[in-house]
Length: 292
Image (cartoon, rainbow, N blue to C red):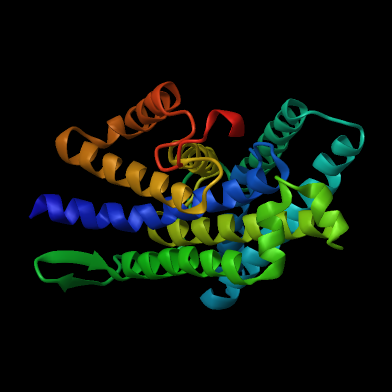
Protein backbone atom coordinates (compact mmCIF):
# COMPACT_ATOMS: atom_id res chain seq x y z
CA UNK A 1 0.00 0.00 0.00
CA UNK A 2 2.90 2.34 0.71
CA UNK A 3 4.18 1.78 -2.82
CA UNK A 4 0.79 2.77 -4.30
CA UNK A 5 0.74 5.93 -2.18
CA UNK A 6 4.23 6.85 -3.35
CA UNK A 7 3.29 6.23 -6.99
CA UNK A 8 0.18 8.40 -6.58
CA UNK A 9 2.34 11.21 -5.20
CA UNK A 10 4.73 10.64 -8.10
CA UNK A 11 1.87 11.07 -10.57
CA UNK A 12 1.04 14.44 -9.03
CA UNK A 13 4.71 15.46 -9.19
CA UNK A 14 4.89 14.27 -12.80
CA UNK A 15 2.27 16.85 -13.75
CA UNK A 16 4.40 19.66 -12.30
CA UNK A 17 7.51 18.31 -14.00
CA UNK A 18 5.62 18.13 -17.30
CA UNK A 19 4.76 21.82 -16.99
CA UNK A 20 8.42 22.64 -16.34
CA UNK A 21 9.53 20.63 -19.37
CA UNK A 22 6.89 22.21 -21.64
CA UNK A 23 7.68 25.76 -20.54
CA UNK A 24 11.42 25.26 -20.94
CA UNK A 25 11.03 23.32 -24.18
CA UNK A 26 8.78 25.98 -25.69
CA UNK A 27 11.63 28.51 -25.88
CA UNK A 28 14.15 25.92 -27.00
CA UNK A 29 11.85 24.56 -29.71
CA UNK A 30 11.08 28.06 -31.02
CA UNK A 31 14.45 29.83 -30.67
CA UNK A 32 17.03 27.04 -30.28
CA UNK A 33 18.83 28.05 -27.12
CA UNK A 34 18.65 27.06 -23.46
CA UNK A 35 16.64 29.69 -21.57
CA UNK A 36 18.24 29.29 -18.13
CA UNK A 37 16.55 32.46 -16.87
CA UNK A 38 13.35 30.41 -17.06
CA UNK A 39 14.28 29.44 -13.48
CA UNK A 40 14.18 33.12 -12.47
CA UNK A 41 10.73 33.51 -13.98
CA UNK A 42 9.65 30.44 -12.00
CA UNK A 43 10.98 31.98 -8.77
CA UNK A 44 9.51 35.40 -9.48
CA UNK A 45 6.03 34.00 -10.13
CA UNK A 46 5.85 32.46 -6.67
CA UNK A 47 7.18 35.60 -4.95
CA UNK A 48 4.71 37.83 -6.76
CA UNK A 49 1.94 35.57 -5.47
CA UNK A 50 3.43 35.84 -1.96
CA UNK A 51 3.54 39.66 -2.10
CA UNK A 52 -0.01 40.13 -3.34
CA UNK A 53 -1.61 37.41 -1.21
CA UNK A 54 0.39 37.42 2.03
CA UNK A 55 1.61 41.04 2.21
CA UNK A 56 -1.06 43.05 0.40
CA UNK A 57 -4.05 40.88 1.27
CA UNK A 58 -5.40 40.31 -2.24
CA UNK A 59 -7.82 37.39 -2.72
CA UNK A 60 -5.93 34.21 -3.61
CA UNK A 61 -7.39 33.83 -7.11
CA UNK A 62 -6.53 37.42 -8.03
CA UNK A 63 -3.02 37.01 -6.57
CA UNK A 64 -2.53 33.89 -8.70
CA UNK A 65 -3.53 35.69 -11.89
CA UNK A 66 -1.29 38.65 -11.01
CA UNK A 67 1.61 36.27 -10.37
CA UNK A 68 1.16 34.73 -13.80
CA UNK A 69 0.70 38.12 -15.50
CA UNK A 70 3.81 39.66 -13.93
CA UNK A 71 5.82 36.56 -14.87
CA UNK A 72 4.71 36.87 -18.49
CA UNK A 73 5.86 40.50 -18.52
CA UNK A 74 9.19 39.51 -16.94
CA UNK A 75 9.79 36.78 -19.51
CA UNK A 76 9.03 39.11 -22.42
CA UNK A 77 11.31 41.80 -20.93
CA UNK A 78 14.14 39.26 -20.68
CA UNK A 79 13.90 38.68 -24.41
CA UNK A 80 13.50 42.36 -25.28
CA UNK A 81 16.37 43.60 -23.10
CA UNK A 82 18.85 40.70 -23.09
CA UNK A 83 18.33 38.18 -25.88
CA UNK A 84 16.99 40.10 -28.86
CA UNK A 85 19.76 42.76 -28.94
CA UNK A 86 22.37 39.98 -28.78
CA UNK A 87 20.72 38.03 -31.58
CA UNK A 88 20.64 41.14 -33.76
CA UNK A 89 24.42 41.30 -33.30
CA UNK A 90 24.77 37.68 -34.43
CA UNK A 91 25.25 36.08 -31.01
CA UNK A 92 25.56 32.30 -30.96
CA UNK A 93 23.50 29.94 -28.81
CA UNK A 94 26.45 29.75 -26.39
CA UNK A 95 26.47 33.53 -25.91
CA UNK A 96 22.71 33.52 -25.32
CA UNK A 97 23.17 30.72 -22.78
CA UNK A 98 25.69 32.81 -20.81
CA UNK A 99 23.42 35.88 -21.02
CA UNK A 100 20.53 33.78 -19.75
CA UNK A 101 22.59 32.41 -16.86
CA UNK A 102 23.66 35.95 -15.93
CA UNK A 103 20.03 37.11 -16.05
CA UNK A 104 19.04 34.27 -13.75
CA UNK A 105 21.77 35.11 -11.21
CA UNK A 106 20.89 38.83 -11.14
CA UNK A 107 17.15 38.29 -10.64
CA UNK A 108 17.51 35.54 -8.04
CA UNK A 109 20.00 37.57 -6.00
CA UNK A 110 17.72 40.59 -6.21
CA UNK A 111 14.84 38.47 -4.87
CA UNK A 112 17.07 37.16 -2.06
CA UNK A 113 18.11 40.74 -1.23
CA UNK A 114 14.49 41.90 -1.01
CA UNK A 115 12.95 38.91 0.76
CA UNK A 116 15.83 37.07 2.44
CA UNK A 117 16.91 33.46 1.95
CA UNK A 118 14.51 31.82 4.40
CA UNK A 119 11.50 29.79 3.26
CA UNK A 120 8.26 31.75 2.89
CA UNK A 121 4.99 29.95 3.59
CA UNK A 122 2.04 31.02 1.45
CA UNK A 123 -0.78 28.94 2.98
CA UNK A 124 -0.66 28.47 6.73
CA UNK A 125 -1.83 25.36 8.55
CA UNK A 126 -2.45 21.77 7.55
CA UNK A 127 -4.37 21.36 4.32
CA UNK A 128 -7.47 19.12 4.29
CA UNK A 129 -7.18 15.69 2.67
CA UNK A 130 -9.47 12.94 1.43
CA UNK A 131 -9.24 9.24 0.77
CA UNK A 132 -9.22 7.39 -2.55
CA UNK A 133 -9.82 3.92 -1.23
CA UNK A 134 -6.80 3.24 1.00
CA UNK A 135 -4.82 6.13 -0.52
CA UNK A 136 -4.66 9.69 0.80
CA UNK A 137 -4.55 12.84 -1.30
CA UNK A 138 -4.50 16.40 0.02
CA UNK A 139 -6.73 19.03 -1.51
CA UNK A 140 -3.70 20.87 -2.90
CA UNK A 141 -2.37 17.67 -4.47
CA UNK A 142 -5.72 17.15 -6.17
CA UNK A 143 -5.63 20.74 -7.47
CA UNK A 144 -2.04 20.25 -8.67
CA UNK A 145 -3.00 17.07 -10.50
CA UNK A 146 -6.07 18.56 -12.21
CA UNK A 147 -4.48 21.89 -13.15
CA UNK A 148 -1.12 20.47 -14.28
CA UNK A 149 -2.41 17.57 -16.37
CA UNK A 150 -5.31 19.69 -17.65
CA UNK A 151 -2.81 22.30 -18.88
CA UNK A 152 -0.71 19.59 -20.55
CA UNK A 153 -3.76 18.37 -22.50
CA UNK A 154 -5.00 21.87 -23.37
CA UNK A 155 -1.61 22.93 -24.70
CA UNK A 156 -1.41 19.78 -26.82
CA UNK A 157 -4.81 20.65 -28.29
CA UNK A 158 -3.57 24.19 -28.96
CA UNK A 159 -0.58 22.81 -30.87
CA UNK A 160 -2.94 20.75 -33.01
CA UNK A 161 -5.70 23.31 -33.54
CA UNK A 162 -4.40 26.88 -33.08
CA UNK A 163 -2.55 28.37 -36.04
CA UNK A 164 -0.36 30.69 -33.96
CA UNK A 165 0.74 27.91 -31.60
CA UNK A 166 1.40 25.70 -34.63
CA UNK A 167 3.62 28.47 -36.01
CA UNK A 168 5.49 28.65 -32.69
CA UNK A 169 5.99 24.90 -32.85
CA UNK A 170 7.47 25.17 -36.35
CA UNK A 171 9.44 28.36 -35.65
CA UNK A 172 12.71 26.67 -34.79
CA UNK A 173 12.62 24.43 -37.85
CA UNK A 174 11.50 26.77 -40.62
CA UNK A 175 11.73 30.46 -39.59
CA UNK A 176 12.09 31.62 -43.21
CA UNK A 177 8.92 29.77 -44.23
CA UNK A 178 6.97 31.45 -41.42
CA UNK A 179 8.00 34.87 -42.74
CA UNK A 180 6.83 33.85 -46.22
CA UNK A 181 3.46 32.83 -44.76
CA UNK A 182 3.08 36.25 -43.15
CA UNK A 183 3.91 35.56 -39.51
CA UNK A 184 5.79 38.25 -37.60
CA UNK A 185 9.02 36.81 -36.17
CA UNK A 186 9.12 39.39 -33.36
CA UNK A 187 5.51 38.75 -32.42
CA UNK A 188 6.08 35.01 -32.34
CA UNK A 189 9.04 35.57 -30.01
CA UNK A 190 6.77 37.49 -27.66
CA UNK A 191 4.25 34.64 -27.74
CA UNK A 192 6.98 32.06 -27.10
CA UNK A 193 8.35 33.84 -24.02
CA UNK A 194 4.88 34.78 -22.82
CA UNK A 195 3.56 31.21 -22.96
CA UNK A 196 6.75 29.78 -21.46
CA UNK A 197 6.65 32.29 -18.60
CA UNK A 198 2.95 31.69 -17.90
CA UNK A 199 3.56 27.95 -17.63
CA UNK A 200 6.58 28.51 -15.36
CA UNK A 201 4.54 30.77 -13.08
CA UNK A 202 1.66 28.30 -12.97
CA UNK A 203 4.02 25.50 -11.92
CA UNK A 204 5.75 27.64 -9.29
CA UNK A 205 2.45 28.81 -7.80
CA UNK A 206 1.12 25.27 -7.55
CA UNK A 207 4.28 24.22 -5.72
CA UNK A 208 4.48 27.36 -3.54
CA UNK A 209 0.93 26.87 -2.27
CA UNK A 210 1.93 23.40 -1.11
CA UNK A 211 5.49 23.64 0.26
CA UNK A 212 6.39 27.35 0.27
CA UNK A 213 9.18 29.18 -1.56
CA UNK A 214 12.76 30.36 -1.25
CA UNK A 215 14.90 32.37 -3.72
CA UNK A 216 16.74 29.31 -5.03
CA UNK A 217 13.82 27.07 -6.04
CA UNK A 218 14.26 28.14 -9.65
CA UNK A 219 17.50 26.20 -10.13
CA UNK A 220 15.82 22.91 -9.26
CA UNK A 221 12.96 23.85 -11.60
CA UNK A 222 15.20 24.63 -14.56
CA UNK A 223 17.26 21.47 -14.05
CA UNK A 224 14.13 19.35 -13.80
CA UNK A 225 12.58 20.88 -16.91
CA UNK A 226 15.78 20.60 -18.93
CA UNK A 227 16.49 17.02 -17.88
CA UNK A 228 12.91 15.91 -18.57
CA UNK A 229 13.11 17.44 -22.05
CA UNK A 230 16.51 15.91 -22.80
CA UNK A 231 15.60 12.47 -21.45
CA UNK A 232 12.27 12.35 -23.28
CA UNK A 233 13.43 13.87 -26.56
CA UNK A 234 14.05 17.48 -27.52
CA UNK A 235 11.71 17.71 -30.52
CA UNK A 236 8.54 15.93 -29.42
CA UNK A 237 5.84 17.28 -27.09
CA UNK A 238 4.73 13.95 -25.64
CA UNK A 239 8.38 12.94 -25.29
CA UNK A 240 8.81 15.91 -22.92
CA UNK A 241 5.80 14.74 -20.95
CA UNK A 242 7.12 11.16 -20.97
CA UNK A 243 10.49 12.34 -19.70
CA UNK A 244 8.79 14.25 -16.88
CA UNK A 245 6.69 11.22 -15.97
CA UNK A 246 9.75 8.94 -15.94
CA UNK A 247 11.73 11.32 -13.73
CA UNK A 248 8.91 11.76 -11.25
CA UNK A 249 8.25 8.04 -10.94
CA UNK A 250 11.93 7.16 -10.60
CA UNK A 251 12.33 9.78 -7.90
CA UNK A 252 9.24 8.47 -6.08
CA UNK A 253 10.64 4.93 -6.16
CA UNK A 254 14.04 6.15 -4.98
CA UNK A 255 12.35 7.69 -1.92
CA UNK A 256 10.64 4.36 -1.25
CA UNK A 257 13.78 2.28 -1.55
CA UNK A 258 16.46 4.72 -0.37
CA UNK A 259 15.76 8.32 0.70
CA UNK A 260 14.92 11.73 -0.74
CA UNK A 261 18.64 12.62 -0.75
CA UNK A 262 19.12 10.32 -3.76
CA UNK A 263 16.61 12.11 -6.00
CA UNK A 264 19.03 14.50 -7.72
CA UNK A 265 21.70 11.82 -8.14
CA UNK A 266 19.16 9.52 -9.78
CA UNK A 267 17.90 12.32 -12.03
CA UNK A 268 21.35 13.02 -13.46
CA UNK A 269 22.20 9.33 -13.68
CA UNK A 270 19.16 8.91 -15.95
CA UNK A 271 20.28 11.93 -18.00
CA UNK A 272 23.84 10.63 -18.44
CA UNK A 273 22.68 7.15 -19.42
CA UNK A 274 20.22 8.61 -21.89
CA UNK A 275 22.84 10.84 -23.52
CA UNK A 276 25.25 7.91 -23.75
CA UNK A 277 22.94 5.25 -25.17
CA UNK A 278 20.00 7.13 -26.73
CA UNK A 279 20.97 10.79 -27.26
CA UNK A 280 17.84 11.57 -29.28
CA UNK A 281 15.73 10.83 -26.19
CA UNK A 282 13.99 7.78 -24.80
CA UNK A 283 10.63 8.61 -26.37
CA UNK A 284 11.72 10.08 -29.70
CA UNK A 285 11.68 7.90 -32.83
CA UNK A 286 14.98 6.94 -34.37
CA UNK A 287 15.94 9.04 -37.39
CA UNK A 288 17.32 7.70 -40.63
CA UNK A 289 20.93 8.60 -41.23
CA UNK A 290 20.04 11.11 -43.97
CA UNK A 291 17.70 12.97 -41.57
CA UNK A 292 20.36 13.59 -38.93
